[in-house]
Length: 590
Ligand code: ADP
Image (cartoon, rainbow, N blue to C red; front, side, top):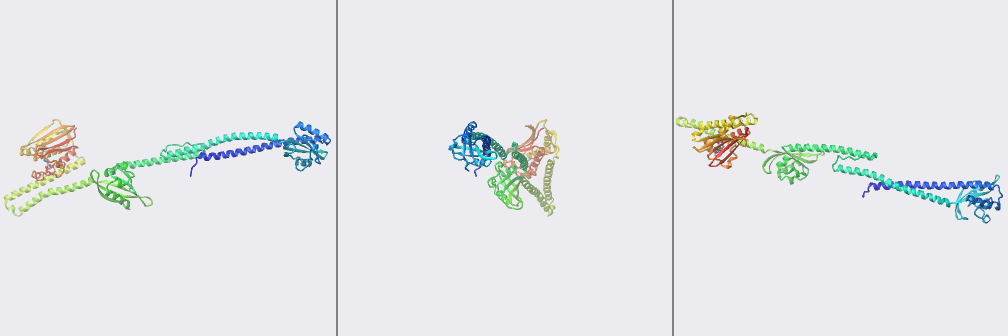
């Protein structure tokens, strides 16, 4: 349906009403004016007829007397005056010769008929004698009580009609003027209403565009003013609600973005409603462009797609372990729950993803560690058991064998002890480090280095290895002397173990880039590149047989790493096969 502007709906009706009112008033005024003129004329003619009736009642009623009088009075009063006798005979007429006039008592001259009966009744009709519209008023002509004739006064209506026409013209001109003025006022009034509504409409459009702070002007028109007030109230409430919704949304965003867990919400068509940063990171998704797109399009992981589909279908929350690889291999634990609307229909699902990669790694490490420990302990225990059995089986009888076997048993027992001691000190350092119970004190690094060198002197001498120390005199750091000494001893011990007899081992302690660096360098067998990243792991050895032969437990470097970490430092290694290795402990300087 074609819609019309309110202005063009209001204005025509206003115009119609104005014109109708004007026309009514104009017609009424014209009619009233016409009647007024006629009544005035009638009153005048009646007065003249009455006066003349009195005059003529005292003269002889013959043509010779009456007619000249009629002509004279007629001229004086500009009125046609006619005197008619009871029998209808005209005895005088101001305009005509009565001798030539027909008798005037016919019923088509009602004024004469009425006057003969004593009444005065005006009559308007066309005069054939004068050929114009006339008003006639006749008054009885009495002699004593007897009506002997009538005196009639008459006037042409043309003057009145001319006057009336001028009057009508005035009314019409005033009417047109008033109509024009009215039309302009009507237009103004209609325009004002239309304007107010247009302004409200524009305001509502701004509301629709989200500008809820806009205020509509409150007009003095009761209804439109109330409408504007109601709209302003509505906008204020909507604004308040919108703010509350935005705040809630922001809170939700903050919570979601602060979560370590990945959160993914989808609708019933598997389109993404929400995805937080953590989920974006885990699934390799750019979250800024993911909203509204289907999960198949955004997340290229068949397992997760199936999981989402399952979560949407299932009535209960579900769980699954997923493995994803978007850049790096990650283990995810997924929990999915369908979202139900009030009617119980499924409207979507929420998936929460937990990155359990670290947990799984730790579990693996623990498993590996237990296997390693068991394996490490098994060898000496098996050997001890074997030699004890051999001794019991008779080898004891031979004192030489017995001595040899007991020697082997003692070595394995020592090895067991060394492993257990290393394990205990490792776990102690680890625990104390975690609980921050390791006491660090400011001290001279040089002292620690010298104590460690002293501790290794015997081992070095037995292999004719020189230990060269280069340490800054006033090099201070915060450390736990006992632990740091153990770390340096472990490094020196390895350097001696894996060096050829007669070679040199260098220990240097100095400041570098604000840090305190203790470097232990040897010119021994070196470590192949592929092992470098793993030698700080527990029980990791490059050459198992050699390490065992040397009495190594495979825990020495792990202990160093934990001690250095407990000091807030780092340990690194550089090595070239056949040329030697340099282990560096880097502690934060003070
Ligand atoms: P181990 O008790 O076997 O020496 P460590 O944890 O101290 O155990 O060292 C781990 C492994 O790293 C050793 O088995 C050895 O293969 C290698 N390694 C350590 N230090 C050196 C070194 N200075 N030169 C060559 N290899 C070394």
